[in-house]
Image 1: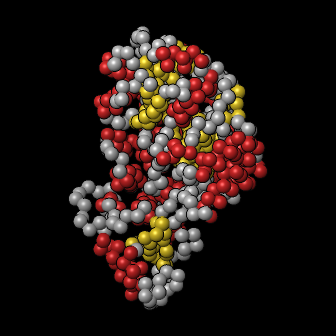
Image 2 (image 1 turned 30 degrees about the horizontal axis):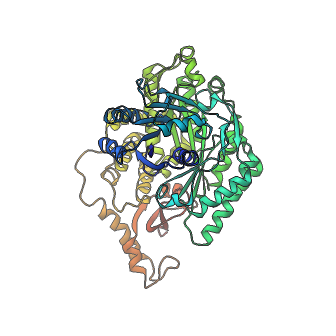
Image 3 (image 1 turned 90 degrees about the vertical axis):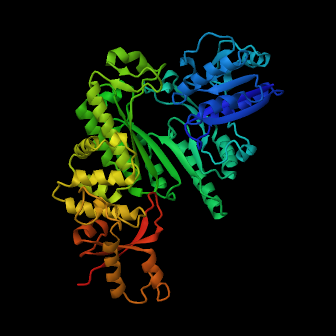
Length: 577
C-alpha cells in the first residue's frame, strides 16, 4: 500500500516539518505501508504536479494545507478526484477545514496534530475508507520527526524547521494560536539531544518555529548558549556555518540575555520581531499588550551590537489604526534601523477571534486565502491602498540594502521619514514602478529623481554613487554620471569609465611604488587593475569616512567586507594639500 505525503511549499529551499511528523506517526501505526514524501512547490507546473502525484498508483494522498498553498491544493484535490475516483484524499493543517470541498467519499479533513489523531484514522486509512473528518487530541506529546538519512534527500539543501515548544503564551486575536492558549515545551535535555543530531548534519539554516521563542527568557538563553558553543566547535572543525532563525518578543529580553547576545559572532542568529504597531489602542484591540518602550530599548541594544540580523514586522489594517497612527508607527520602526522590514497587510484568518469581530471593526477583506484586509472603520479602501503601496516602496528600497549610506543619511536627518517615503511612493507611482521589474538600476534612478529638488541633492547623488559602486558594480548607470542625474536621453556607452579612469590615473601618478598594507611594488599593477577608483567631495567623505577632512578618491576593492551586510572593501586616499 503506497501512501504519498504531499507538501506544496512556497519555495524549493523550504521544507515541511508536518510531512516528517506525519511520516513518523504512520510508520508507527501502519508499519506495512510504503510511505513516500513529495515536497513540491506552488510554482511547479500544475499538470506535471498532477501526474507526479498519481505515479505508482497510490492508495492515498495526504496534504498539508496552509493559506499560501490552499488554492493550489484545492485545485489539485478536485482534479485528482476526477482522475482517480477511488483515491483517498486527506487534508490537514490550519487551512484544511476551509477548502470548501464537495461531499465525496474519500475526501477527509484531519484537525489538530497528527500525534493526537485517534487510532480509527489509521485503521480507516489502511482500509481505504477514511471518514469525512477526524479530531486530534491537541495535548498529544511530540518529538523531533527527522532521521539522519533525511539529509540524503528530503532535507538536502533546504531550510530545517524545528520546534522546541508548541503553542504561544499570548493570544493575539489575528493569530490561529489564540484558539488554544498555553505552551507545551520539550525538556531542555531532549532539545539539546535533538539539536545535536540536526547540527551533526551541518544544515545551512535552522528555523525555530516556536511562536515566541524567548518565553520564558531563561530557557531561550540556555538554548542560545548551547547553539553558540556547538557552532563554534563545528567551525573549528572546518564545517560550514549554520544560521539560526527565531521569532522573539523584544520586551521579554533580560539584561543578562542582551549582554550575552552582544558577544555572539555576526550572522549566527536572526531574530524576527513582530512589533505590529506602536498604537496602544490597536494592540489592545487585538489582545496584544507588549511594553513598547522596553521593546524599543531592547531592539536598540541589539541593533547597536551589530551582530544579529533583525527583521521587524508592522501590520497595516489593525483596528483603531488611522492614517496618522500608522505613519507614527512607521517612523518609530524606521528609527530602530533593522536589517529588514516587513510591512504586511492584516490577514483575517478563519477560526481566529478577529474573524468573529469583522463587523465590529468594519473589516472588509478578500474572500480567498490569505484573506488580506481591504478596508476598516478607520481606513477606507483608497487610504489603505495608498499605505500598502507606501509599504511596498519602503520594502523595495530598504530591504535589499542597496542604499545603506544614502538611506542612512536621509533617515538621520529627516524629521518625518514616512513623509519622505510618501514622496518617493508618488514618484514611483508616476513612473509605473508597480508594473515593472524592481531592478537595482530602476530603484536607484527613482531615488535620484525623488531627491533632485532637495538642497542637498548633490551630496545625495554622491552618496548614491558610493552605494552603487559598493555593491560591486564597475561602471555607473546614466543617472549617476556626474552632472546628468535624472536627465532624459541615451546613456553613454562607457558608464563613466573615462571619469573613473581619471581618478585612477591621478592616484597612479601620486602613490609610491610600495604602500603597505595596500600593495607592494610587485602587486601595485594588480591593485590598480582590479580596483574601481572614484572621486568624492569633502562633504561626501565626511559622511563616508569619519574623520576625513578633505575630498579624495575611494578605491572599491575586489574583496568584500564581512558582517551582516557585506559590501565591497574600500580604501580612502585624501587629496594632497
